[in-house]
Length: 631
Image (cartoon, rainbow, N blue to C red; front, side, top):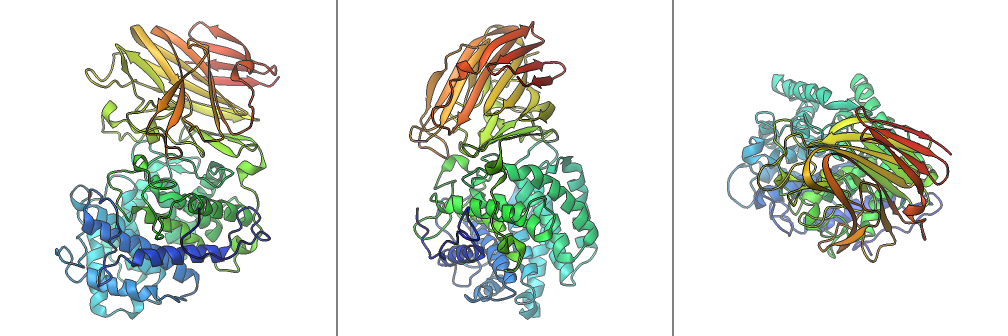
């Protein structure tokens, strides 16, 4: 699809993979800003973009439009050394003055007050973008404001320091506000306390392997890159704080070592977690690593990942005909949205433009693009701390992530089937498929059906993960949660192990405590009728061998409707259920029934699988262990 504003000609000499250069990034930032500013209020304080309002209301949505586009403009201007050919900063200065004149007033321009997250919290999110943008552009905007406007802006921003954030990455919003205030000589005990509190929480949320949980639970998703790493590392970089830069930068480096594998050969980021409408913000951590030097990636690989992600969405209809980012994934798609998503929410994608802080002569822009990790070789990588298993195949450029650790259930919450979230509860995600919509047959799901009620998977308990040469595994257990009636059956438990071998996925489950007459259902990947993908599923033990094709009429973010393969089998007491799954873009893939020659159960303690090439995989439960010996 064409982009509705002009872009430079492709440069396949310096960018053989994407054709995009720094000039393309500047042109996209300019085009997005020009389109969004057509919807500003007369005093420039709010950008009332068209679309469905968020739960926070249209005034908050208008502030969101101002704040998130301001961040893109700030990266654009600061990266150009203050050059502002389109006069954007004048508009943002005018909006700052208008919005802070009478905050909380119901008029055309006034910004909403920043209150506690459960009262009126969304402005706290936007305060971080306003503060960071002001910090980036201070020499050209802040320093030229009237003292009265500066004082009013500070007072509004301090609302973030005086109210309670949501118990997750939100604590980095007052942290960012405080960082700006300190950078312009307005720091005090209040700003210091906000920063200390955020960093204390960040320590508790760091789980290893470069991954933070988004709060006290086990939510691992793209918030790692576009929030939990971005704010502290960029703050240290802007402040010239070598000690903090080293501490948080080393975590970013470790994160990128695995995260860089989560981009497909077509440039797509992994389709996992909430706020996916932020799209190419997924590359923010890559650009930040290149900017600060806290990265294991060469500049050519970093640019290939960042530009590949940007181009992926521009080529697939992320922009409306008038140049606005739509609420969705490729184009509009309601199923990827949350209730907090409003018309300007997609503009958190502005965080990707952190790459522009690297000047034109930086290696990020001068080095020749190199292939992405998935384009170099087949890879299987276990990430034990978040409980994730990454499986990438070079031939079709698909990256799959097997989820045994990310659940988005907070510690204080009960487990309810009504809160089932397809973007966390599935067993696997990829760069070419999305989960089916609620109400449709769930993809990549193991369900225990009790009295006809199918269970969902909520809180996950990781049991281990590891990898070897060309293979890897991850394991977890959960209590099946049932809709209607009693939410759980006493003693009912599922232990699950995924073993990735090349392009194959061996999925083994031990169900304990199932009432007599129960059934187990396993589904595979959801694919559309017009996609060049094959989703295969084959039962090996405790499941019928031949899959039944089911239809998901609401489709996924990738296809208007989808097919989902399913195999089933009886359960009761303790039982083993093993199947083989695959998602591939390779033409004429080998049938799964030919991949395995024998399956040997060890009672209910485990199973050994003999592969057609002579390899052997042994899966044991309690404790969860996997061994794999090549043929």
